[in-house]
Image (cartoon, rainbow, N blue to C red; front, side, top):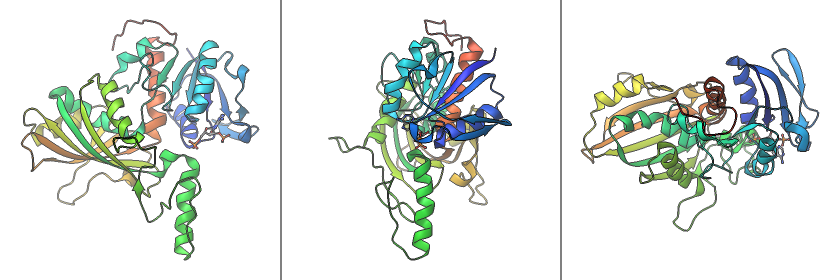
Length: 345
Ligand code: A2P
């Protein structure tokens, strides 16, 4: 049955991808409402031949709405998610506001779809690097439990929003003209440069982004003891993240077996041409639904270790696609209303 959907943050990088995906996946829409801040109220956006007008979010915005797809930042979600839930909607929230709340399921449909059944009105979409990592390594974890993950990320500008993507292009132009790049949204020049992720630093020396990869992976996998150490880096790529991943198992995990598992797993694609030295690249992952995985090899320094490389579209599977897949799961399983549904996945 078609449902009434609202997009909160409809003018942003993830917001516009929600529109693309709803059309592309023939999501059963009874109506679609576009919400953002006062700044973009009145802006017109075309969707499937119709012109929709962006509205400034307000108390009455969620009346009659069944599903809210939210990607407007943590403070906006904190302000509006409960209003939407009280109006009877289920909120699928892409911000970090509720991810670690024990009452809120944190869901990647390929990994823990059953968690969505227990929602109380809000379902959190995980951090983008965490989703991409999880989709790639969970199938291996199911064959043989992973003991420890060491990961370095190469994160695109899109993770900092649509304006950060524009800023990289502007900076590249400025540098090519011999001018000084002007950082406004991002803290430092990103074109022809890179820098360690600028999320707030904690006393243990990790930044928040790195700790999200630890805590969120544990919650999604249901493995509270899993060891994860991440180094997150912002690179001058527009919209796909890459990750260099080292996995440690308790027993050796053969490369051939790992390739077979990855080749058959949902949401991932094995991309390896060892003759041509061709492996996943962010440019090839851009616009793709699958996480591309390659360079699977034995860790020379550890008998029970595997190395792999992955690239995934940050805006798609890292954000908008995962949220839309959660919405599709709720419709398919009839889990829209909050409650203790019997998980059947
Ligand atoms: P607006 O365009 O009106 O600022 P991105 O992650 O690409 O930067 O996008 C952020 C999205 O969140 C935009 O659609 C933006 O709308 C929206 N947004 C930001 N702050 C608010 C707010 N206070 N209330 C509603 N929407 C907001």
